[in-house]
Length: 396
Image (cartoon, rainbow, N blue to C red; front, side):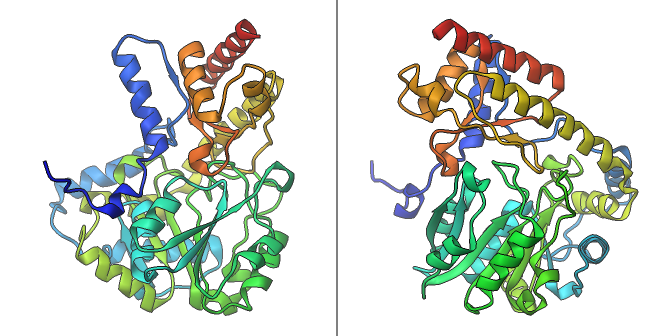
């Protein structure tokens, strides 16, 4: 049979996080008792007033196509959010609503990258950044970071990574998988480097913006460097903050020419996002924001428990994060003491011996680590830690 699959698709890998979740679900169906700490999905329900807005949209007949780049109401809600929360001003033609923040990032890359253009991606990174870069014709330039720098790229590293082929830098703060956020001083230092390279676009992936407990308010490059606004694209969405992962609404704001190009891509691929989801997202952004704080507090409580618990496990070393809902411990000592070759094999070992599913660090560009999601109840987290501890003790 002829091989019909393109060479481009052969270069990319399936999402590691989705693969882990599917494996855990498969084992459960087979009767195995598995605790899944792989999925990056809040365990909370979508707030009632947001669900109600979706129900009302259905009853009102809002079930037709909308504008390709989002309804006027939702785009105005996005504009209001940026002005209210980020001190950034945009016009409707600078906003595009897509089927998730992932879709927005893909559209951006497809709209701006030419074959061979380089995309600087600090590691650890969200697993999809490099593969989306490859799919859209770019070349990923991975810049490794480690615990000593709190997993954040330094100005010196950024300077060294920029070449005449550099087209895009991706910053994710708070980060998936590390939970680290860039401070104002750190952004200031990175911005000073970027000022000297007008060919470099900057995408800021802010999807975990509201799940944050750092010591200072989150800042952004647009406020710190207004002169960079003509090459800054802000990516966000409602999935994480409002527990709306399945509603699939993300959005981007940036220079009009880039957003227009993104809209052109979207018009020839998915067209508009779901009309019902857009109505719900409008209610999320315009409505009472008090629903966010209880979720943030719960994530912080789980974070504090999990970081302390992980550091009590033999061979684990975990840094406290600033936000998101992930812990990203170094497990090299735990692997070495058991003769386990790498973090992929160690994740399999945890699944088989502890009944706990985690994601290996290698797909995030950080071998020797694993990612644990604490978007799950505290009682379940405690069970997971107990199981891991017992498995480690039994193998020592």
